[in-house]
Length: 144
Ligand SMILES: Nc1nc2c([nH]c(=O)n2[C@@H]2O[C@H](COP(=O)(O)OP(=O)(O)OP(=O)(O)O)[C@@H](O)[C@H]2O)c(=O)[nH]1
Image (cartoon, rainbow, N blue to C red; front, side):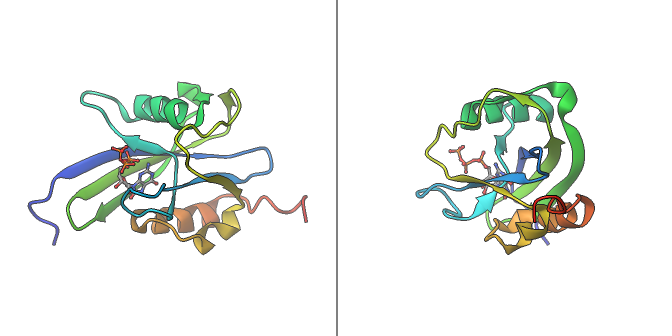
């Protein structure tokens, strides 16, 4: 049971490129789960809608601007960390303006869906990565 813990609302996004690969971001040193991989995104600000949080966070972290209409709900993670319960919707996005420019010193990489679960993922993302692997085209048919 996960009683008496604060609920943390985070919104995240799986950016998908023309080859069908998903952008993953590595948590920088000094943060919890440093070195582990996660979807770009972040905490909701007070009163903020999850979609607006995704647009804001992607601009802040990666310098790109997804259009609101391009965010497609995919699923969510509900995960009990030691000190909070995480609730995190995940959106898919295939269209954005601007060029990828990680702004917070974080490493990012494009990953084919069938390789996502091989990453050292933050715990709350493991199930979502499996879902993406199973539901997205592998994206490798025309590249191998
Ligand atoms: N952005 C993001 N956060 C995730 C994911 N999965 C997951 O468990 N989290 C957790 O959600 C929490 C909030 O993430 P965040 O990126 O806004 O915050 P942070 O810890 O980097 O701190 P800060 O932005 O306040 O400096 C973190 O504890 C992070 O580990 C994910 O896929 N994306």
